[in-house]
Amino acid sequence: MGLDKPRSKLTKPMEIKTEEYSIRYDQINNTVYWAGIMRLTSGQEYEPILQLVDDIAALGVDKLTLDFQELTSINSYGISMLVRFIFAVDSKKTIKLLVQGAKEISWQEKWANNFQRLMPKLQMKWN
Amino acid sequence: MAQIFGEYIEETTKSREFLRLGFAPSSTKLQQRWRNNGLSADFLADYLTTFFPTDENDPNSVEREQELKSAVSYIANELLENAMKFYNPNDDYPVTLQVKLYNDHLVLSVTNSIQPENIIKFQSIIHDLQHIEPQELYVRQIRLASENEGESSGLGLLTIIDDYQAKIGWKFETIQKEPEQIIVTTMVRLSL
Image 1 (spheres, rainbow over the protein chains, first blue to last red):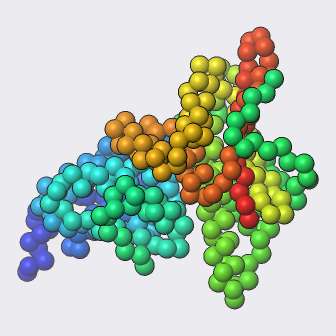
Image 2 (cartoon, helix red, strand yellow):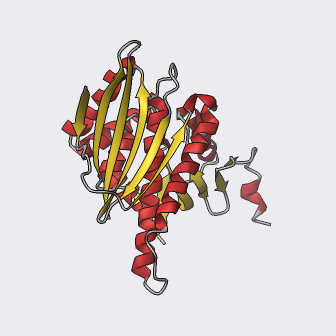
Image 3 (tube, chains in turn green, orange):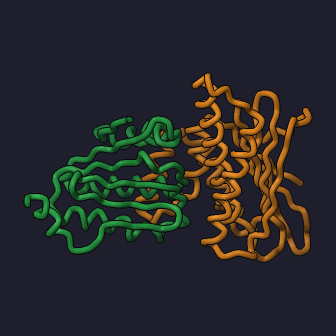
C-alpha cells in the first residue's frame, strides 16, 4: 500500500559496498548507514560517496540521519570524507541533518568534538 | 648529521616490551599496501593489549583497553600511511614501524627514507603543526581537504596530537652522501 510509494522514486540502488566498508541509504527511515572500516586511500574514492548526496537530495527528502554506529575504524582520509559529505548535505539548504554516533567507538566522540567547532548547529545523538 | 623537530625524545630507560615490523613498500600496489597498513596497525594494537590484562567485572578496565587499542590502531595506521606517502621509491630502504612499551607510556615510531624534494613539503607540515594553534589548523586542514580531493597531508598528524594528547617529534638523518639518502623517523609518545 503506502509503503510502495517512496520506493517507486528510487531509480538506482543507493549503496556503496567494498570489502572494508559499506554505506547504504535506507529511504524508509531516511538514514544513511555507515559500517565497517573506512580507511580510504585518497580523494579518488570520494566521488561515488559524494554522488550519494545528490542522489538522496534528488528524492526531495527534508531530513536525513547519518548513522555511524557500525563504523568502527577510520583514517584521516575517511575523516575528510565524512566532513565533505556533511558539508555537501548542508549545502542542500532544505535537508535537516542528524548524526547518530556510538560513544564506545572512541574516534567518533573525538571527531564530533572537533567537528562541532566547525559546524556548531550539527545535531548529534549518542546511543 | 641529524635534524630534530618537535618533541623527539631519545629514551634512556629500557622498554618493557617492543615489537618492530618492516615493510618493503615498493613491492606492493598502493591499494594492497593501504590494506596492509590497516592490518599491521590493528595487529600492533591487538598485540599491545596482551600486556594490559582486563578485569571483566571492571567496566573501566575494559573501556581503557578499548580506548588504548583504538588509539594505537589509529596512530599506527596514520604513521604508516604517511611513511608510504613520503618514502623514496628510488631506494630499497625499508619502512619500519615499531612500538616500545614503558611503565607509564608507550612510543610508536615509523622510519622511512624520503625523497630530497619531499623534505621541504614534509617540514612545512611539521612547521604548521608546531606553530599554528591546533583548532585553527584543524579548520584550515578540513577546508583544504574539502576543496582538494582530500589532499590534506597533516590532518592525520594533527589528529594524533589533538585527539590523543600525544607528543610527537621527528628526526631527519642523512645516512649516505653519494647518492644522498635521507631517512626520517616520526615518533609518537602516548601516556598510559
